[in-house]
Length: 62
Image 1 (spheres, rainbow, N blue to C red):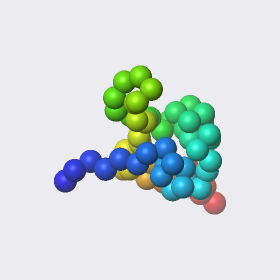
Image 2: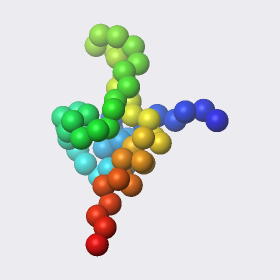
Image 3: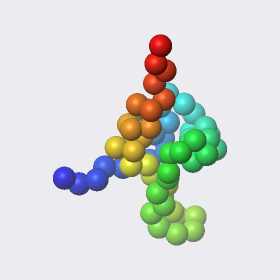
Image 4: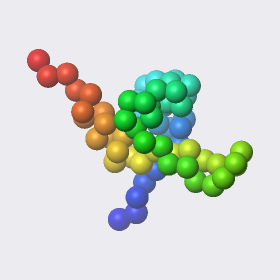
C-alpha cells in the first residue's frame, strides 16, 4: 500500500484550521512535516496516517 500525503491546505481543511496555523503550530505540536524538493519549489506535506493518529491523541477523555 502506498503512503498517502496531504499538502498544507488539505491538512488545514482536515483539521478545520487555517493554513497559517498548520505552518506555525503543527510542527511545534508534534505533526512532523515532510519536505519534497528544495528551495522555493519545495512542497511541504504531512503523512495522512500521522495526522489521523495525532487527531486521535487530541481526544479529551471525560
